[in-house]
Image (cartoon, rainbow, N blue to C red; front, side):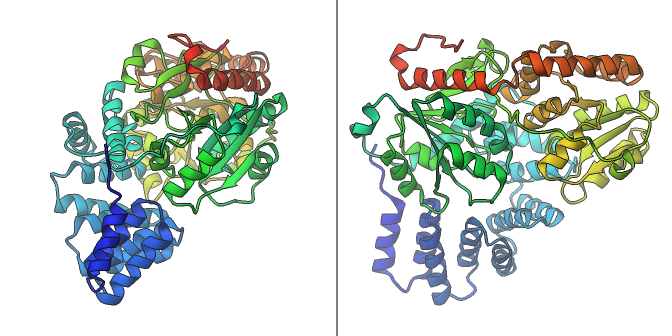
Length: 572
């Protein structure tokens, strides 16, 4: 299919009508869609010279400023645009995005609610409001909003962000539909790079493996992969390229990554330039470590910079994308029954698909009084992001608290008024609100130390603990979960399974509540569980990154030579 570059058309339009502000706005939109922030912002400013205060130009300027990290400026521009066009739903949505970025959580919710009131039948606007209300633990109209969003995905009448859709209680088939619709929209406007012969460097025995993410630093992705990549570098015959979509954060994790891989800071490159940059590195296998998780560059992957492209780690579901060939998983998190709902070919590791940093020291926690925890009583915890703390998950947690005297639930503090809303929900469930204890976000070492003060991690459903489950297990806190029927609902279960503690994977909410209550009311049973975890952590291989690196290397070679892979490829 021949696709005309929208930028070329837009540039032709401004050349023909250089005094037309709207032509410059269209050019700005095209440049920003292509990831060229500098050119997009320049076009915005030219439009504003021609039409000062024009809301469409101000809105694109805000988008450009947000893309380059000038968040306060972005809010100012978008607020000006909103004042000039208070009934424009699109500007209200962009303002909501900008307000999210600067931490004005409740104001962002109001902006999304306004957009939805202006166009109540538009499911994409409903999806923005639904996702943000989940983050704020604002459960008003959740069911109605969810029905509207699911209907739109089912009929293909609106494009919904796949990552936010993971929080809905849907099946893998609906998640596939959602992702495929998003991928199709990108594919339809993206021209792949020309197919060329591989360079001479690719003929060597050294495999060129690339990983692309915005998380190569003090970020969950960096924390998960760093120790495995250190081991991978020791194996030899694989050259690791890290394509970083975020600036250097100066963290120790970033330094460790740079020491074992060729780290390319490519965050400022437009999409096409980045695709060509990757192509020039002769990468054999390219891992997308963001997927639809936000902060990624699906447009770059759609240009096909590498001959083999893989969905792994950050986005727990199918990409639905024709440009992704494989998904790296394991037999528990992606059983054969789910495979028909994945667009990728599945390669299963013999251990959990999720690596971890096994070089982290776990210091003793501060005194409980400093943490806001009672000196006695069971400490249940759930440090999942607030959007996972839905009514179902919190209802079962409240039932546990009501049956275990003196217990508390330790949570990560959420945005805006989320903590207050959760305490109000506890009161409605006849649980004293102060039995919910909130922890502000901490540097990773301090966070891990605090985790060791908890007795039992109560998982969420349908979106499990992922990195947080791995963190809890590493810190010695057992995880109780109910594996579901999607990838996102099976990650904690996969960790327990490969740890050899599958008895912590229970069938349903009733079993979850009974197990949590039994453990909470029997100190000896809870102590035995923690002792079992300490033993399994050492013996199971879940945290053996030397073995993981060997499996990963074999997986890379298997995917690089797909003609040699079996119909149901497995490693080990």
